[in-house]
Amino acid sequence: MNMTERQALIAGLEAARRTRAAVALPRVDHPELTLETAYVVQQDWVASRIKNEGRRAIGYKVALTTRGLQRAFGTDGPVFGVLLDDMEFDEGAPIPIDRFVAPKVEMELCFRMARRLAGPCSEADAIAAIDWIAPAIEILDSRTVMFDPASGQARSAIDIVADAGGAAGFVVSPRRMSQGDTDLSRMGAVLYHNGEAEDSGLFSLVFGRPERALTWLAGALAEQGRAIEAGDMVLSGSVIKPYPVARGDRFEFDYGSSGTIALRFE
Image (cartoon, rainbow, N blue to C red):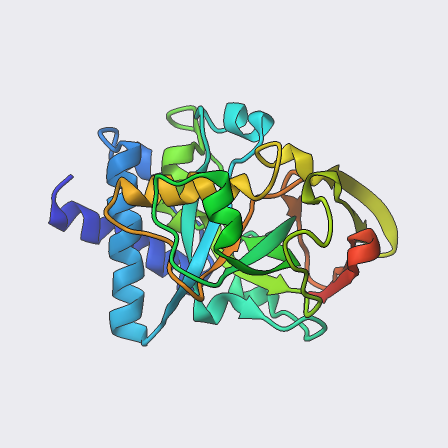
């Protein structure tokens, strides 16, 4: 895929983001698209938003961290996307659903980094680089259709990566934890939708230990000549499947002794 083709693909995805009208899967129009090239598309799109909108990159999201989701999207490993400053929402403030095409929510942890973490690195290196940890909710979005009836293709990991990794929004709890405050692999969370319990999960589902998301991400970024920088926030990956959102929905995410996060979509 040459630069002109990448720019055309990005223009279509950006138009979908602005108009809230999903576009075709990137692989349908570009069957030659690989995971490596999809990351180039993602980087170019992020660079365009930074240049043209004055946005600022503030971290990363790790996705497809469970075996079930990897199988569903045709990959054997996780993927990542970039978080921009306009994606962060305050807890308790109404979230405008018109910001999104087809939003879903996931329960995650947020790691804020005290210092630079470059891969390859050990789990101990990653843990030592953490400033604080907090419960977090990701609002992911799909600027593409989920299924192309003409070709029979479903949205894949390659399409997700090209589509900014699905990055669209997130909320971080003001309740901070330090490494060692709790065993994150034994931590769980429950999703309540309009007052009813709908889903739950344990963070052991995320790499066995969610801190390993940092080790994986540092290694993946190193392959592109990048690193996790001091001050970056990293979303670990979800313990549940993406849960769809509609206008007027109220959610409460219960992290037990680590607190709750409440969201309202308007």
